[in-house]
Image (tube, rainbow, N blue to C red; front, side):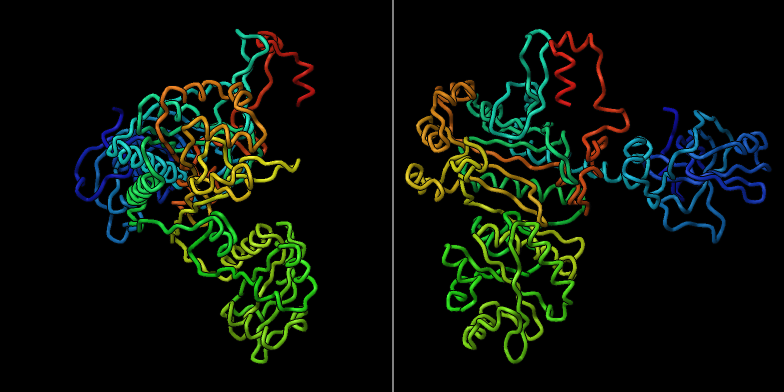
Length: 589
């Protein structure tokens, strides 16, 4: 090794020892002819002293050092002079007086400071990501990611899981996210699809008898990007045979408990609370609720059934709902603040937002004139409002009304400072709708067609698919979905019934998923699984909402790798080998 110690480990115990350090120049200061250099590596910073009275040659070389130069120094550890200690540094009580200096490499002036407090533009950070990753905060975030991965593997190994890698190049199968396609050179006109998840392979592993499988799986999806999405991402993929939903929940809760202990030395309470999908939407306006604050929605449909407010009456007559949300002390809101909340509701497809203010005399606002005195009292009692509160109303179908108020709830949670920093709220959401309407008016699976329906809802598959609930579950944390999965269908006759709802025959399905359905002929065990969004988990544990901050080399929002210049052009020769015509590629672009 070129070094005996790192730049983050020397303390008073090392005083008098000769050490060799390697690292980057964080800063260089000349104080009265004595040069002080902060030498940095990923473990920390050590102050190195170049004193002409101690070694003239080494001092002369040090006069030319620049930021981010790479050095190797040899010297003795000594205690800093009284009053010169730096309690903010782990090595702040000592310094190294240099006897020897090797310049391993010089460096151009970096385009931004390698400091936690210096934040360059996102494009600049991504273009020079290797410099951005030198910042201690970025190294800490990636080291935390490493610790979470290590803790996850340790926990799953203890629970008898086998880590199996599955292919990235696979056959295209419809029904999931948009795939990246890879033209085959040796099979003209055919393409591989990059796996958007190991879903089919992990089910095949269950058929193979590997009853407990996992991997930190790389997944690729050709989707538009946002802060919590990347074209390539990692998930902790888990599948188990001969299990119930409760067994899977216990594994995930234990894994998360271990990860939080390892990453933050923080204990989280298990088991997590569970909500049905309908309860979660009714109380929080979300299927991934933030449970860290108590602001909840109220179903006011029955209460408002006796009002004379035409807007509400029309919605109720059309089998819609009226939901309300109390804003504590919201009667003091300005008209502009209320209009901003209304604008937020409209972005989530709600036509408008009605409201009343609660006073000692009753409620005030446009709808109030259509509420009788008994109705006003019933309303205030139902939502547990007090004088000075604001009541917001959403009137529409169930999902639109609750979703719009749910988004307003999240906004208020932030603006009213109802969420304590550094807290974590977990829950499970279960009993989700199996089917949803497609644009053509038919039915489609809300998740995927391999999810098992709840046994008590099987009778509705042919007569009323909208009533069928899935054995599907999501784990939410702080208002984000961090994991999702389901108990799978393992019997062909049930699979055929589900497929008939979405208008497919078993024969058509076998053409698309032949290798999976054929495998089911040979004794598929009952099985189920879940995938934990690893990037998102690593971000949220560290209080970050942007997963780019925990991914070493992410793409930008335009799906570009600015550092390496991807995607890039390829030669005509390469396209010809892949049997791809350039004019077709140009048109697609």
